[in-house]
Length: 627
Ligand SMILES: CCCCCCCCCCCCCCCCCCCC(=O)SCCNC(=O)CCNC(=O)[C@H](O)C(C)(C)COP(=O)(O)OP(=O)(O)OC[C@H]1O[C@@H](n2cnc3c(N)ncnc32)[C@H](O)[C@@H]1OP(=O)(O)O
Ligand SMILES: Cc1cc2nc3c(=O)[nH]c(=O)nc-3n(C[C@H](O)[C@H](O)[C@H](O)COP(=O)(O)OP(=O)(O)OC[C@H]3O[C@@H](n4cnc5c(N)ncnc54)[C@H](O)[C@@H]3O)c2cc1C
Image (cartoon, rainbow, N blue to C red; front, side, top):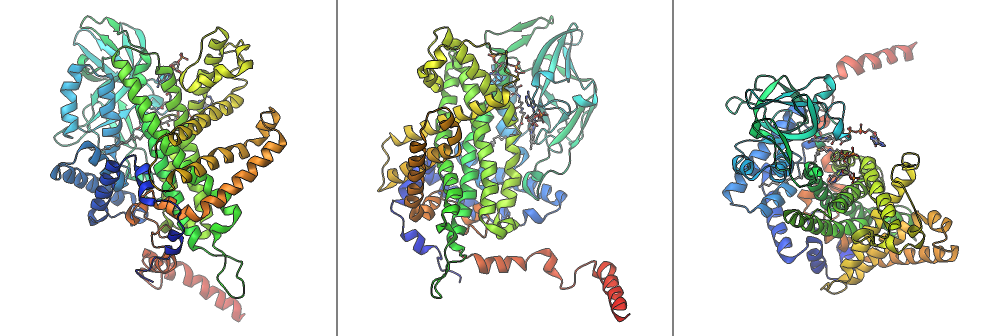
């Protein structure tokens, strides 16, 4: 029935002020107001339609993305949107595009690694989109091992230029988003060679395509690497391949904030750590953590609403069957994900603060917190993306068969999100970085150094003080266990940031109580999952473990009547969710039925191919049957 809210009874059950929770989720009243305004702007504009995305062939899909990106840019300028509003517009348009790499990596790389003079030259062009850039680091042969990159940038003192070259097939740049078909420029990572000496990997601004006719410049071979996983999804992006054949660029196109090459060909290093060359990755990892809660909450919103609509079994005296959300098994799979969405929201806010703090310290030449910032961004990127990708898939299963339909929104959401476990650092490789940081900390505790910040707790673990450890010895052998330790460390950060959030003043009737329940679900479900470890190490007795499980079940019951309101607080429009199962009004069945008839296969009653391939079979069966 159109216009009826099938979830109205569920909404009436809420024991807290949903509007106040929306503010907590958005971060502030101002953020909520901006979100509402921009979300409506996008949803009301047919140019941002996306319901046909999973059906479009690649070329059409890609052209459509180019159209949307150009239109979004036009609207940003016409409406004079601020950076905050423009970035919200990008969020609600909800389509991965070359612009993400231009704004998200190309510009930050120039800002973070370029000198003031380089920034003055390149940033105005990039801000006006008079040049479009990408981040060309990964190669066919190496992605994780950045120091293993093979592209070379050889200084030619006669012409005051670098010669950028791809010496092998495996040195071809491979994967950069926006590179395949659109970017005019790339921040390209290459080994700096001066006078035969290899100075390691550095960033260079290289023009790839003509600004007149968009054709590749001499010496450049460039194209798209082909279709990726899923329909629609990440195929709106032109991930590319790039080869250089002795391409010359002026010396001043090496990004020279961290190290410089003089006119005479002298290599000089600033007083800053060389790891700042990796700075763009730290920035993007922080953004990916902030985004994880958006993707997870979106899947959870769909699965929660549908679980309240869907009924199976349990009819009493001809009454309605049980809503599947009332099954404890459904709750034990769904509610920890709901709690994780909130937990990731708050840890994302904290990480943004940490990143800003580190950047301010770097400005003042204080590099002391850089290792912790690297460990936190790497570890939390790994934890939140893994849980989110698995969580989206779990939400699909929680929606039963209908979750497998593209119209549920979940298959495309999974396909577009799952590469986050790989890009910007493979999740295991990043956890190994955290493990290394933890082992270093242990070795420093042995020398009497008190750990601070996110590792302060290690100073309170008595037996660690007696540990003497060498970071390398046994590291590879024990790496699988160390990765588990790294995950536990990151989970501890998430829990402690959730608890810190609860210590703040949180207005709104019942809001704090709901967040307390979710926080409890978050840490108790982790405790439940890892109870074997807690029991084995005697951190818990069997009795405590059983009590914790009782408490967890009690919290599920507490959250149950509030579940729909808790996902309403994410404030997602139907346009943004793009899911029949997750519709605000819960009007699922008529809409699923209606959507099926819109599938291109149903445009004709008899399908194309029937006469060639089906009818001959049927005729043959008829003939056999007569025999
Ligand atoms: C107006 C309109 C607005 C519109 C708005 C639109 C906005 C859109 C925004 C969208 C956001 C952006 C979305 C982007 C989507 C992402 C796409 C994906 C992009 C990519 O994937 S880029 C490629 C990423 N590649 C990687 O991540 C590679 C992973 N590998 C590494 O990071 C490193 O190489 C590794 C594994 C960490 C290094 O290992 P190792 O060889 O051991 O290291 P080194 O010898 O090089 O260094 C050791 C030393 O350095 C420390 N270290 C390492 N990394 C860092 C770091 N990043 N920061 C600080 N320190 C670091 C390391 O711990 C070691 O320290 P020691 O003290 O132990 O020596
Ligand atoms: C959708 C997408 C977009 C991307 N966009 C960009 C972009 O814009 N720019 C760019 O430069 N790159 C981009 N990339 C590349 C991306 O950053 C790399 O793919 C990523 O860093 C992983 O590196 P890899 O492919 O070399 O994986 P590999 O390192 O080859 O990983 C393969 C396996 O080996 C394991 N492994 C690797 N090293 C170790 C180790 N030391 N110890 C234990 N296990 C290990 C990994 O865990 C993994 O299981 C993108 C990738 C994708 C999928």
